[in-house]
Image (cartoon, rainbow, N blue to C red; front, top):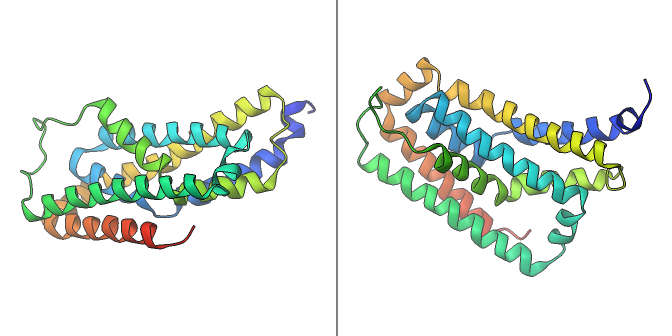
Length: 212
C-alpha cells in the first residue's frame, strides 16, 4: 500500500515506540494511578488515564510544531516548569502523607468518588508538567521526519499518541484497581500511602535540585 500515511509509517512507529517506553516505565503517573486505582477503583483510574492521554495530545502537537525543543532551550521556561512540577508533586506528597497519618475509611460501594473532571484534570496536570514525559517527547522530536508531514499524518500521530498513553496507563490503572491489589492496599494502607508520599516528595526534591 502507498500513500502519505505509509510513507511516514517508519517515523510514526519510531515515535510511538519511544513514547511507549515512557508510558510503561514507572514514574509519577504510575504512582498516581497506584493511589487512585487502589482507593477508588477502575472507573476512577481510567478517568485519570483520560487526563494523562489528553496531555499526550498537547505534548505530541507541541513536538510536531517544534515547541518541545524550543522550550527545552529556554532557561526561564524550564525553571517555570520545574517550579510548577515540583509544587504539584509536593502537593501529591502532602495528600499521601495525610492519608498515611489518618487513613480514610475503607473504600466501599457508597464511597463518594471525585468527579470525572477532577480526576481527568489531576492526570492531565501531572503529565503535562512532568519533565520525565517531556524528555521523552524531546527525544521523539530529535528523530525528525514528522515536522513537515501533511495534516492527515499529524492527525494519525496525535491520535496514536493519545491511544498509546491511554491504553498503556490504563493497563497500569486496571492492575492497581484489581481486587488482589485493593486487598493488599487495605491490609497496609499506611505503608502504601507513606511510600507514595515519600516517592512524590523525593521526585519533587530531585526536580528542584537537578539541572535540566
